[in-house]
Length: 382
Ligand code: V47
Image 1 (tube, rainbow, N blue to C red):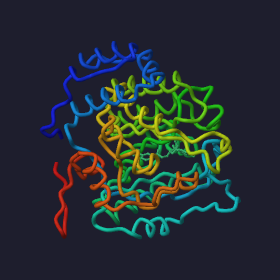
Image 2: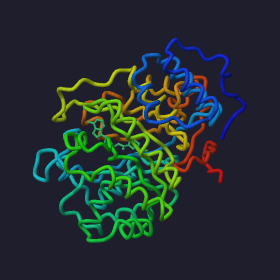
Image 3: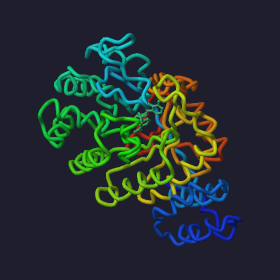
Image 4: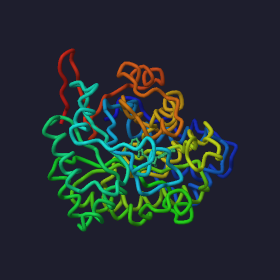
């Protein structure tokens, strides 16, 4: 949904970085950037020039609009067999702090703080060694029965592959059964960095990059949209990031099933990688901008405020992002890893952040259909 704002004129572009000039020429000619271009962008310090280009593309695609949604996170269990070094959320079954929600508890969690305003439940959890596939089918169908108007964006590609293996079903059959139970789309988590060398260190026991991409391919083939993420700011280098983006773009050319790309800044606190530094503002902003420039076939780039902080997410709206995610009632994954952002934000605050960035806030549902509200009800434009 574009508004009247027209993208900045190419004549206004300036940089002293000669490496950026051919990239700018490609952007203005709507030519695709390649792997080397992506690495050049990562290595350039001219964040204003990179941001200017990303903003140019962002305004070409979305005008002045910036999206947010009203959602709730539900994490049914933190018990996880994977023991990823990147993670502060997962626990072994008998470890202190381990929890698994009975179905009624998950329904109760969904209902607590629930209001008619919520349009999405974002549901992800650990790889539980014993929970049967039926638990997930009942969770999804039970939520759908209780909250029929709420979009269920649930289970990462990693969880899907794990459930399929445990249930001895193909990925496709697993997804089909979940879809029949009421699954509407999939979140983008678990992608981390596709490169094997990095994956071996940060998430050794997870599916590999090709398996993540194959699972997404299958989901898209049976009509489920998904998001995609990239975890950056740990042990990866610029080439690893560029490779990750290009592998996502290649799959998107094939399926057109991705809606949104969400770069996730690594939070080291309380993880086995706690000796690493947190990401800098420079990298966070650059990552948003480079995502917009390289992922030319992804409709949306999300600056997830929970992870970036509201301040950086807001600035990102002028550096390539068109979405800042939602009210996010009860975020656990980043807060276990030391995030100091609030647990949730009300709609009015999100709108203020967006307006002060000079953008026009549009509340969306998960499929990016505008949501129109009155004092007592809301409608989704189809
Ligand atoms: O897959 C885990 C990451 C992801 C840490 O699809 C960590 O709309 C940083 O995928 N520091 C889950 N990151 C979150 C996620 C997500 C978030 C918001 C929106 C959407 C969407 C998806 O969080 C995991 C992993 O990559 N993660 N631990 C950590 N210590």
